Image (cartoon, rainbow over all chains, first blue to last red; front, side, top):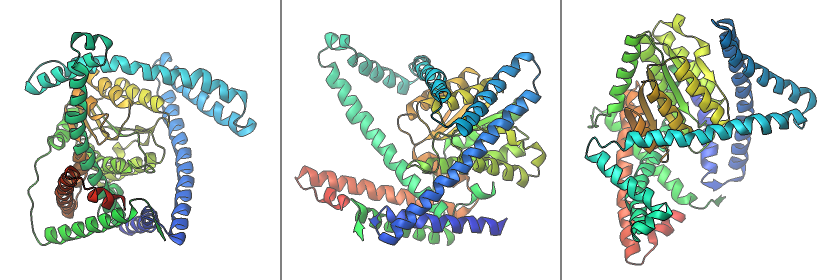
Length: 208
Length: 259
């Protein structure tokens, strides 16, 4: 196991260094090597997609096998039929087959749109939770939130003409500076994590 | 060799970063123990898994929407490092761990991490490969899958670490509705407010990466936290100098960064 982990780190280092160097400068050999490794990455992603499909199949087949009520059959059957139906159509008739378009236009798109629109309700309930005044922080959040929300509706400007200016100041100065701090900290953390993984200092993800 | 825009500055910044990391590593190896503030969310991890053990219900974990092929891959890496610790705790407490993935490339890695953690604790019989699930590359198909797991499996705790987008609120609201203890961690600035309002503990921005370092088994990890603090101080100084220079009409720092 130890040798295997060392091998994984070496492979990561060999593949990672050219990609890292090519992000600093266009160096003919290094950049070509980096592009090649990225192509390999795409191939690996293709294989992992296949593993994902297998996992989805096993999980749903397992759910079918362990069902306790008749109603529990519907969900895994729909997933398996849609998944493998599309795979078979794609393999035997190509991706330009009308059935592909039909599923995308009439199933995937409406379902995705419904999922996205549900966010409005989730935001409303999260806003209710956030705006309950329990302490000073929540009170500040409530006041700032109300000012920004009022400024974003036409009625807000009628109440107080300077409301958009106040809202803009809150968003640009207070919110903007806090967000920039988080972004800078996050970027340093991401670089440090990537560096640790690249040189093999961090190995906990390899051994569990 | 043609440097890219900002490439020279980025290269030297990277060299400085690596040198500082090496220096910190040597210092920590020599016995130096820097002070680090406690991160409440890390204590919350034990609380969340302990609660699941008491209730006899599973823990749900998701490493977010990002894979390893984007600029936000660092968050996914940090999430998988934390997963190693979470899986170890779940194995120790005999708690079922459900992992939901959006990216196919993350699926085999998370499965192996959980398997190795259960194996290391001598509880491999409790590991079920079908508990590590891939849903879909599509954002809302994945979101629906996660909400389905939280509601269908009656999870006791919901842990969300990594990069998230619009689906973050759907997960957190579903977890809150079903009374889960919720721990979230992300550097996606647009999603942090949603997590703050709905979760019990939140790892904000760099805390996600710091948590990954703190949770790692190697004590030398401390050196990376030291490095992050030193680089942050240096950056704050650079920003202050840049702001002063800009105030006096000079764009020397901007030009330096763009080189």
